[in-house]
Image (cartoon, rainbow, N blue to C red; front, side, top):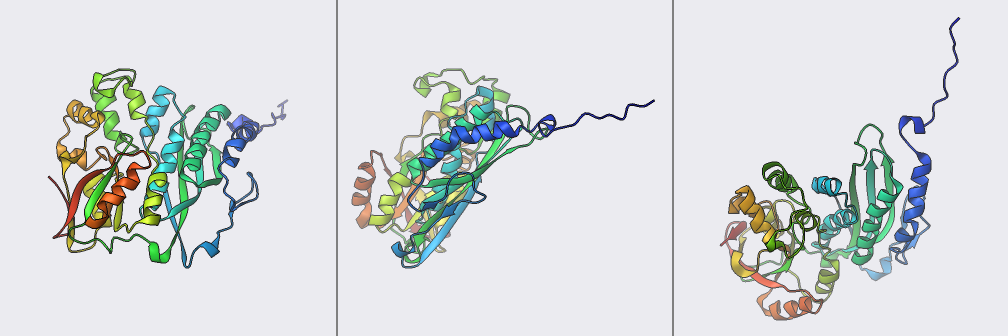
Length: 349
């Protein structure tokens, strides 16, 4: 006779652990709540995040949204088993983008997909997200952690998110004010940020065979891995005061595509940007990448931020006070170029 008895399968048998998911939420709850602004309604765990916009603060409020992920920089986090900075990368790539249109970041939501849920690792990543949100002044009002057994390898994950900000319609930075004679101010990056890591990995690990633990004199005591995992810089704390107090004609987040693709995004027809490459110190990591990978200069400036993460265009009469305002935040800005009449684009010289 055939035994027709079957084992009762559970969700855990398929690779999804609901209990682990609940525990991860418990681990991150305090970090998330620490980001809440007065406008946040409800608590963690709802089906949607609630945010009561203070419309009385604005004449014509316009919501500005942006979304992004971290990309293949995650491969370094897996390789070096370091996950406490990746969350900041996810936040920065979003809030920096909406910032250049004059928007104050209000709230952020993240999406974290894992192969097998490790509550402590999830908590580490999300605490990085929460810390970056708090530094940027935006609330982490929700998110999703998806355990996708068989889709991602154990120990691997992907993270993305989106930010929503607000700006008065009259104060949106569109680039329409940009004119010939305007001056370009550069605000330093923290390093490679989160762009061009497919090329980084090709150079450092495929071609050169580095392991990430190497120390090179030019990296000032950091290992190669530490330098490459330096999180993307958050610019709201330095740029929001500028936006509120000064007449900013244009702003650029130097992200994927480097100078050649991003600078023209702030320009109107009839003007071009001229950037002087020797106007600021280029961080050693970019010089090393170019040398080790035999990457030509154009490709470097078309892939990486080369040490400048944010560019602000102002009237010549406003240069000194804008520079002083940036310095007052503890930063070190540089005059890196100017605007000329000509075909829309950017020239590096």
